[in-house]
Amino acid sequence: MKQFLLGIIFITLGVQVHAQEDAWVYFTDKPDAAYYMGNPLEMLSQKALDRRAAQNIALDETDVPVNQGYINTVTNAPGITVMARSKWLNALHIRGTESDINALAELSFVESIDFASNNLSDTGKPAHVSQHNMVNKQLDIQAEYAYGGSASQIQMLNGHLLHEADFTGTGMTIAVLDAGFPDTDTSPALQNLYDNNLVLGGYNYVAASENVYQGGSHGTLILSTMAGYVEGELVGTAPNAFYYFFVTEDVTSENPVEESYWVEAAEAADSLGADIINTSLGYFEYDNPAYSHTYEDIDGQTAFITRGANIAFTKGMFLVTSAGNSGATENPHIGVPADAFNTLTLGAVDSAEQYALFSSIGPSFDGRVKPDVMAQGQGSTYATLDGSIGTGNGTSFSSPITAGLVACLWQALPGLTNAELLQLIRQSADRYNNPDEFYGYGIPDFWAAYQSALGTAEVTKNAFSVYPNPAEAVVKIAFPKDIDSGIIMLYNSLGQLIFQKAITLDNSYVSVEALPTGIYSYAIECGDKSVSGKLVKK
View 1 (cartoon, one colour):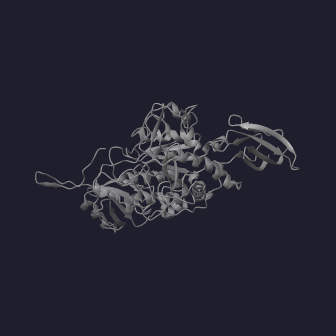
View 2 (cartoon, rainbow, N blue to C red):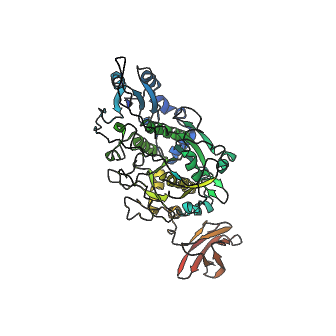
View 3 (cartoon, rainbow, N blue to C red):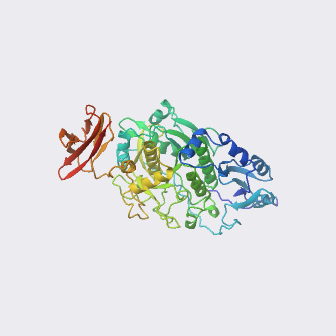
């Protein structure tokens, strides 16, 4: 990690060169609000408007762009560099000397200025001194390059049952905010995206360019857990979803401007109509220790990125975020934006569903359950830049593995709001009634969530299930753990046995194509385990 020692004053030929500081300048209003509110397609795509309409979300002034005249005035101010902008927070991220930044307070349209430095902030944020530690960037992963399959990371969440029911993310749009996507367009493991025109675009906020195929490789690796497809080796959790790529993480340094890049990218994702944002990034400590967060900041409302994430949820998007990899450090708690109120924060477990020691823990400083849920982040299978298959560790993996299944579940349940979907996933987790700071609510069951939303009997990994239901031609039986065979029986409305078949893990399909349309009863038996229910033939 390259370390930048900010705040040093150099004396050259008797001239004092002042340190550059980062700050946010907030504006009082949006003079163009009436125009944009009357012409919503000038600020949002039709797809974004459709998402709002589907969830009964009204437009408001946070949707209106930052006034360009205000931006121009600040840009032209002496010694000021504009790094990023946020329409949601009506603010600019700027860089300059302390005196040049403070001079902006004289502008009539400037409401307040908030310095990133805890030692300079004069807007009510308490100052404190942070001890400088080496940055442990939460996007770091430990690659092993051992060959492996992706079965466990999908089956752990019962995502394979969604796939087998033909819910693979089709029609859903996922925005991936990360460090870079090199070789994504050439990797054989991701060719599926380009063959099917599933990449919709993106932007590189770090380089201020359209080129997203540069920067750190982290984005490419985590993308493969959602979108990768190598038959017999790797299947992503949402291989048929649409994707946007946004580069917001600068791998050469750790600075609060990355929080502002993230918010700007989230706003773009919203405007373009994205449904889901995956964030395998997190922030706590910065190269300049005066900029670092403290545990007190992890309260769901302090960090700039967290406030942006909270607003993103109000726009109808679903946010999935890595908890972080600091569980074994002296600062083991989640960072930001994992503390946001309505983000689904992911911790990591291994293939045996045991807590991974590196996974950051909760609760948030204000006492909320964090992480929300867990997924495999130790020994996760992903594709390397050249398309070969490897395994690695990090909550960076548990987040996209889950985000892909969120897309599949939302595809299956398009009538739900993001809030309803979030609660459904939390409630499906195996520790929902007894959460803790390590596992949160536990490991979610996406098939149980789907069945629960349909109003059918709750299905868990310890029970048989029959799907799709209603069915037209074929139904499949999913087995509980540790059972690999059984017998299924179908009965007509008179209670007469009309069909019986031995089923196994390798032969669990039953044809119902020849049956007349109607409602049937079924029973599945295996030793002392049994289940019964209704099957609708369309």
